[in-house]
Amino acid sequence: MSSANGAPGRRYFIHTFGCQMNEADSRYIADRAASSGYEIATDPAAANVVVLNTCTVRDNAERRAYGRMAHFKALKTADPAMKLVVCGCLAEQDRDRMQSLVPHLDAVFGTSELVRLGDALAAWRPDFVDDEASESRAVLRPLGGAADCIADAYSHLRAFVTVQRGCSYYCTFCIVPHVRGRFDHRPMGDILAEVRVALAAGAREVTLVGQTVNAYRDGASGADFSDLLESVAALTGLERLTFVTSHPKDFTEKLARTLGAVPQLNPRLHLPVQSGSDALLRRMNRKYTVAQYEEKIAWLRAYAPGCVVTTDLIVAFPGESEADFEATLALCERIGFAQAFMFVYSPRRGTPAALWEQIPADVGGERLRRLADTVNRRMRGLHEGLVGSTVRALIQGPSRKDPTKLAAKTLENITVVVPDAGLSERELVARPWLEVRVDAGFTWGCTGTLRGIAERFAGRVSPVAEPVYDLLALR
Ligand code: SAM
Ligand code: F3S
Image (tube, rainbow, N blue to C red; front, top):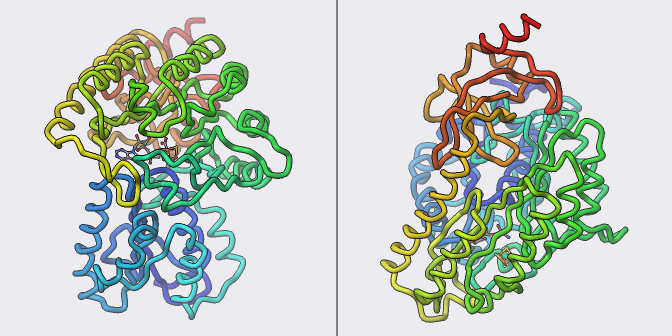
């Protein structure tokens, strides 16, 4: 194999653990690799450079990353010239000891060393001659596939744009500020420029990403997050806009108004509450009370009535009594979250809560099950309530469970699965908005019937199913 400039081909493989910040970093690494003349490998055994982009937010993420490093030793033994590189939050946390724990690693890059990692990729390709073709490969190749940056035909339809790095809030359970540093907000002009590039490459939905996006401030103009949303929404060609994650402390009445007023914004707010007990919220250093959280939800309901709320919840945080836990269950019943990421507290080295008296694992497991029952029941109810209605959803591609079906996401981020109706990939990419009649609701999402496809979110629907076609023909 040889690359565009005649140099012998080199391949890289990236495995990404963790959150959307890591996924954004992996896209940066993939961009740098492409502009240095690397091709992406779908199999690590076929790669010259293997990058593990790690997470340390909970213990199981850390164990999985170390497991993967051990697993890749066989690749190093088979091909000693292959470079095995680790970056991301675990690399930052364990930078002093990682190479002694895992001697077959070639390099470890902390969270602030992404540029150096990009430089190393270029240096490992001394034969590569930079040229215009490699520049355009880097900019034009649509990168997707969250875990490994392997693009499929549909990846470019969704773009994730980082608005801020780090976090300054120091929740007592959280490792993020320790490994990613304090807030660093990107200039608004850079964000708008990146969104324009994504739109030119065919993005239909843009997600603005950061640990606490709604604390955003543009250093030069002082513009806040609502101002940023309005500016992004005004860009020509933008169809849908959404954002993760918001902190309740920074959720203002102005932002609730913006969610109701800007038509391109998806009716969806991810607002992690963590617990329904004020005593726990104080110990977590969350900077709001349950009443304040509910007041913010009331603003949302008033200004953006169709907007669903999703959240993150932690059980068995140190000091959580049965009464505290029941307050969390009661809050979930009152709010009716459309989705929740639920975790058993996992002690993180260097964070205050790791030093406090811990709750036994069996209590944590039992609380997680009870919480999941409550949240899942509400989710199933929401999805069953959609039966008989018609929703518009952006295609994701063939369903992972059954590739003869198509999976798509509604604006509320609800998964809908439909039989594929014999449409080609080309037709679906050109008209990626599916018009779906919902036939059944489950905890995970909905199944339905494909009635039509549309080029634009608000555009005309081309019918695909017989009954709709007949009705239109009779008009
Ligand atoms: N600002 C980010 C957000 O709100 O999504 C926080 C980042 S963290 C990657 C995502 C979620 O992981 C948190 O909201 C919290 O529920 C959970 N989490 C963080 N640290 C945790 C820990 N030590 N144990 C259990 N869950 C944790
Ligand atoms: Fe972590 Fe709390 Fe920031 S959860 S990312 S310290 S808002």
